[in-house]
Length: 549
Image 1 (cartoon, rainbow, N blue to C red):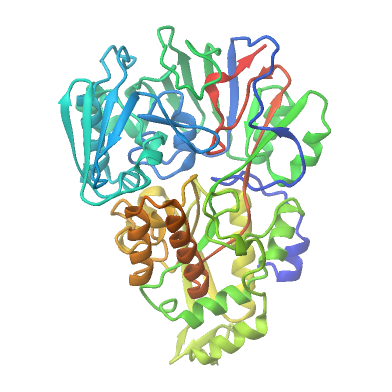
Image 2 (cartoon, rainbow, N blue to C red; image 1 turned 45 degrees about the vertical axis):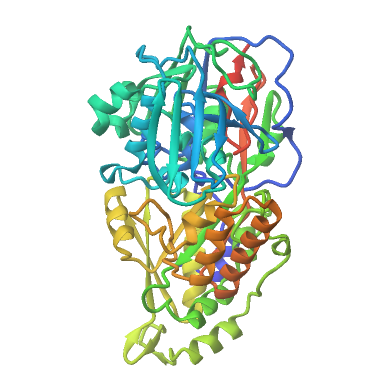
């Protein structure tokens, strides 16, 4: 075990990037700039991805990489412009009932899935029913649908989505890949195979999903008959690339090495310790965009001891020198986060641009004493009534980057200094789902990408528990927060909605339900022959507009 002092001097050689990448604060290219005017090119893009999806079915998946890699295959009812406005896509228009309970979409004509099936109202109904089916066990998409009741097929081109309560963010959510559309034929014949990816995943997008080799690569091929890109796209018609080969390179050293050796043309989530070298490398450019959503955050299970006591939660927060760990792990490239939402997220509480609490072992020790953890065992850990102050943090090795795991070790070491034992428990995906669904954990850590503060509902509403379509990692059941979240979803008053979400954020920090680690951006490095690489509103690579000269 590293002491805190040794940890902060530890060189960052452990590799693999986070599910949502860490932040860099120096200038590189502007991800919102228009594509290069030079030859668009065609050919194959070899792309180094940092994380393998937990599922290739976005209706079931939780990992952001699922949405990122499947955007070229699965499309949505609407598109979200860089300024956050909602634009037509597979739906050419829509209306909202006065009570906010029914969204009626008029669908675009001539759209087909790559298997030849027409995209119509029945396809929308089949997909939303799949999202909400108990067997799907949706971890993310069901939360985006919110208080969903049913989908009504009015006629082949008209579909009405009925809600049980107003859901002000529904239109924005409808632009997510996680609510993208599978072919109804695939849903009927291969619903159980969608998570495996490859040819089972059939969409309306400009690429087909040709094959996947678990742990190694995924291959996508251009559709020659594609012609319904949204108005936010850089061009219309078929994609520029003939194919995309995504190499699943979890280790940072492997991913960066593949880029510098020319084995890949572009690579995502460049680690902090390699940015300086790539910035000065001839022919390589780093494209960067701030990642909206939730930073890598530690959620304390408030539903059971020891973190049902706010004093213990606050003690944990005071005990961790987040700034020191951020500096030690990321070599000064990134900043500590203070609020539940990343600063780039619309609706982030502005006061959390400044420190919201202080690192103080003395305060941590005092709070633990007040909570009754006054004894010490032979290993130096605190005890109360003969029981050790111990907590378990399960994690899935496949999905947690080496950088985040290193961060976890730093947190573990910091807590030991005040007498708290934190056990880091590696699990496979099935084991993690089982434990989180039952609430059998004390700490859980993850990031959550999104450009609407409504995601706070998925993370902190009492009805958004793990296993029920939500991701309430802290298992918060706070009536005041529930009321604010419900009101925010019901109101069309933008200023009132923003104030309600700010209240939620302030109470989360006040009660220490969770605490964030560092601010993230997406960093994608590319060779000069790759043009048109931009990052969309969610900081995901837009593969449709890329060319390889």
